[in-house]
Structure formats: structure tokens, C-alpha cells
Image (cartoon, rainbow, N blue to C red; front, side, top):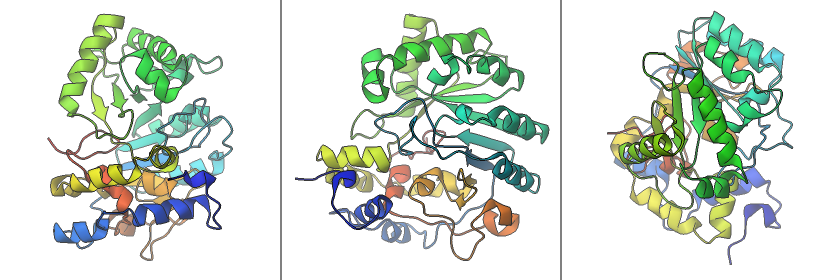
Length: 346
């Protein structure tokens, strides 16, 4: 019987076990071999259009699908000094987008200071919110703060019904999410001609690939409007990557091998060409640099002789860097592709 990585009696660290498990998935061709066959002998970045910054792993929720393994007990928080290093790096490049993530990024004590400094640099800020934090006492004035600074909100909402959402994210999460969405709508988020962008994220509940993004977006728009009079701009359908809690779920439920084979069989060269890591650089809470948020959670930093910390930021080499890949990358290249902004192909 398969057992979760956390429960195995093994001398390797948990992350070592995850990396080894992913690279030895039964019946799955190594991702690098598949990429070479598709004409990508070495996947390389083309620019840094987005700097995605994880400001900490602390979160008020403990979601079953979380690849960050975030929660209330996580102590990893980006310091103000590391934030300043990120600002210094941003000042050296023309990346128009700064994507703040966590955990719940809003729980970092310097979140508002950081947002203001990024806005002062003339960059567009994205806040990846779990919604519920916006109705927690002490954080409930954040919607106004974000609206005043024209911050785009990308919010996780696993489904438009309470049962499915709460099953993935915890009791009463759906109700709190609806309250937060209503408040955001009151401020103009998600409404035409306001410029206040509110996008939602759908993750499958279980070991499945997401449905076609346009179809599930139509369902969300219809049902949220009909049931709660809620509007939003776009829905992003995101594939669950086999990392941390979701990997444990796959192993414990006996779905790991089938899921990995499902991802690899759905490999799409066009999706591979458009993966987000080619135009993004990810910064960890401690300032270390990664090709993407998923590599960050597996602690696979940028490589091939490049600077690995934001204090040593080198715009030229990092913008054209060779990207570190592994079998988890099948999650971004399966079917219509998956990125932090939804599917990567039409």
C-alpha cells in the first residue's frame, strides 16, 4: 500500500523524498526527454516580465491542495530588508508586473509598505488572495487599501458551491469568500470600466485535469451572478501540481501513478512553449531565486552558474537563463497548459 511521504520512515528529508518520487514516477518518461523530443533541448527564459514574490508561508487556511504547505503555524516570513532587496532589483529592470503570493501575502506585517513601494516604482501589483483573509478582523480594511492602489486581485475559489469549496479549504470558507467578493464588488472590483481587476482561480477537487477554461468560466459567471449577485473579470483554470499536500493526497489515495501518467500522456508542445517560467522570475520569502513558484516549493533554485539570491541580482543573465525542469513540469504542460494566470493555449 502506498503511504504519504510525511509518514515514511526514510533518512531523506521530505523535500528529497518529493523530488525523488517525482523523478521516478512509474510509467512516466522523464520530462527532459519529452521536451527534447518536442524540440526543446534546453528550456530557456526569454525575459522577466513578471517578478513573483512569495512574502511568506503563513496563512489563515490549511487547504488540501496547497503546494506551498501554507498554514497558521508557518513562520517563514519575508523581512523588510529582503523586500528592499527586491525593490532594488525591480528598479534595475522594466518588468511591468509584480505578483505577490504566499501563504496569505496580506499576513506579512510589511505587506502594505511593500505594496506602496512597488506602486511608487510604477509597477502593476497583483495580490493573490484567499479571500477569507479580507474579512478577518485587522485585515478587513484591506479591500479599500487595495482598491485605492489599483491592485489586481487574483482570488482562489475552488468552486461556486459551498460543499465543494469547503471540502477543499475548510468549514465556512465559502461563506467568508462570498462576503469578501461582495465587498470587493461594492468597491468596483470586477465591474466594467472601473479598472479594478478581480480574477478567480479554479483548481480541480481531486486527481483530475481542469476542464476547458472558457466553459468553467461561463459556469462560474452564471452561477455566482444568479446565486449571489457577484461579478468578476476572468476565471483561471489551474492544474494541481504534485507537490507538498497534493502529492501526499495522491499517494495516500492511491492516485499518484495514474495522475502522473495522466499528466504525461496529456503533454502538449504548444503549452510547453508558453510556460510561465519563460517570462517570470520567482523570489522566495528568504530572497532566493527560482524559475517558478513550484520549483521554489521543491527548493530547486535557478542554476547553471547564475546568482541564486536577489542580493546578487543580475538582470541580463537571469532574463536569458536556462530553466530547471523536472517531472512536476508536466502539470504546466498538460492539455491546454497551466500557469498562475490559467491556461496557456487556446
